[in-house]
Image 1 (tube, helix red, strand yellow):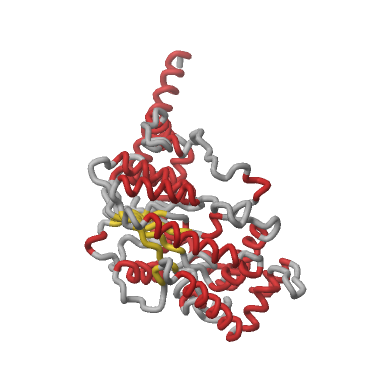
Image 2 (tube, rainbow, N blue to C red; image 1 turned 90 degrees about the vertical axis):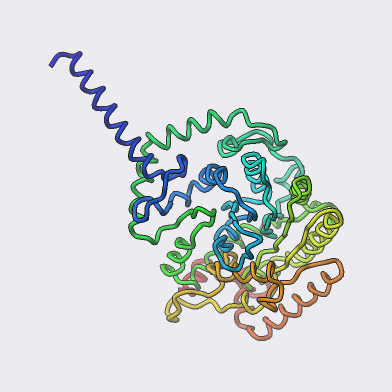
Length: 432
């Protein structure tokens, strides 16, 4: 074979192989780049969402038209299911635009992106999940907390508009790059194979067409390690993250809370588009609330609720804004954490200290949209009842400690308060 024929054959083989890989990746569409039809048992589950959610939702959201948008972190991402029957017909269809590891700032960017892609019809309602911890920061590392980074990262390059609502000139190039990598990269080939394997197993984590991330990964983790060990590991992580150095809501007690500027920006955008805003203080398991208190965050937690109430009431004078509080010591959040040998396969309301199940999310949706159901769980906060609700949560906290003194003492020891604190490996070993 002549050198020319060899090179020609090699080039043709490489081209054929590349074409086959591109065709395969296109048909599977692991990242939702091409909006290929989902086929049961082939590509209907999308496990790549575990690492590529922001990219996938940037493309997915441009193809939907929702009446209600859910925003927030991984907590509503998993816990608020747009497909639940608890949503009234007037709120449907619902899309979950929540993003793992994000705060309201990232959600606002994606909301602008959605609005730019659906200029003719804005959503009627926003359900915005709020996490107390996301408003805390370390003063020495914060600089000016009101200054936002304005340079675009890779994820932001996919969005239709920038932070000012101007068209994003970098988006076209980013889309071309994503499509090239989605067709020809080895990562995409591996994720396509994982997509087929996960779809055939029917139990893989999945980004559903309505934006909801399935609870498969949480269920697998809980069943593999046991809830008690999982909870203890999460407790140790949050103690390490928020224990020392201590974080704050603002540099001074009388200074504005960091992050509220973003909330005001969100409210301003919603007002301009005539969108109702429902703020939701997320539920956390009683053990997380106990740790926050033991680490000295309780006063800040109450202040945060008061300021949210005032902010919502102020905005509510000129637009539709309500605030719901699910951050107390109600029966659901006081659920016992079973040990691995207890015989319990799942918890009813929580996967870990902050990620609640879609069953609890259903109850929250019913409470918000069908007032009178799920009685006793969650309350709408207003200036006239916020202090009473704060006092009630304190009383419920005291009642929990009276009823569960050993558990309250164990959680206190985790943060090395008044009691001696065992080594971390001893704590984990005792949870097995």
